[in-house]
Amino acid sequence: MATAPAADQRRLLDVQDADLRAQQLRHKRDTLPQNAQLEELAARRADLHEERIARNAEVGDLRRAVQKAEDDVQAVRARKDRDQQRLDSGSGSAKDLQALQSELEVLGRRLSALEDVEIDAMEQVESAEAALASATEQAEALDAQVAQVTEERDAQVREIDGELVTVHDERGTAARDLDAGLLALYDKLREQHGGVGAAALVGGTCQGCHMSLNAGDLAAILDAPADRVVRCEECGRILVRGA
Image (cartoon, rainbow, N blue to C red; front, top):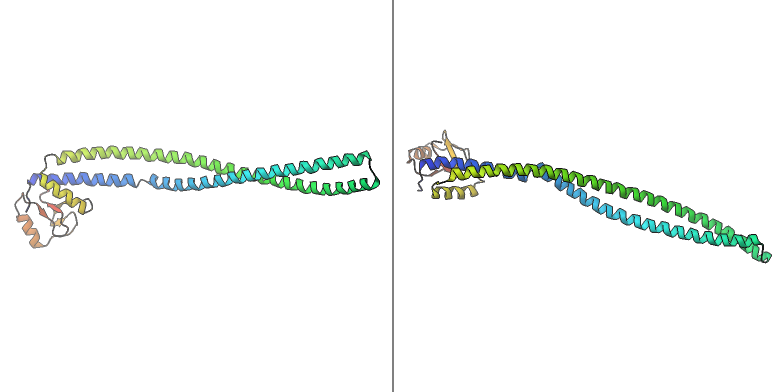
């Protein structure tokens, strides 16, 4: 059975305390609420990005529709003006003038319909541009929020990292000159048992698994030499006596 100075075994609890605090700090750093916020904001930003692409494409299509409507209106208006000038000049036969009059009526109806199309297209452009502007404004506000939350997160990470440095130094001090075999066993058990490799024996109870030892095991542990490394029969962790 392994042995290690009793003082080293007791000091192992200081190492364990530092390791637990470091584990808690790393967990705190990994589960900062800002991390979840940033994930949510990133998803919203991705959605907004897609919306802006779609809105921008829609605006482009509608602007082209407006341009086409304007071109159609101008073409019909120009032809109507030419026909009106010919009619006003009175040149030509009565049949030709009658035909011009009929064509002017058709062109008038056509022009009115095209102007309605033009107005509708312009209204659609205005609506689409407003939607694009709104999406852009939302994206800018979201970017500002991301920057703020990131700054808050980074500030907390820096603070936690500073605490981790302190805990690491404390761990180094506690582990300095510790029995190498004891420390190796502790590190192995810590990996196997969720970060806890050593626990104090208090009132017949292992503080690692919080199970009470039976009378026989407890008597054997208490009677063992002080330098003997004993382990909990329930969880297998190193039991530190006299802590």
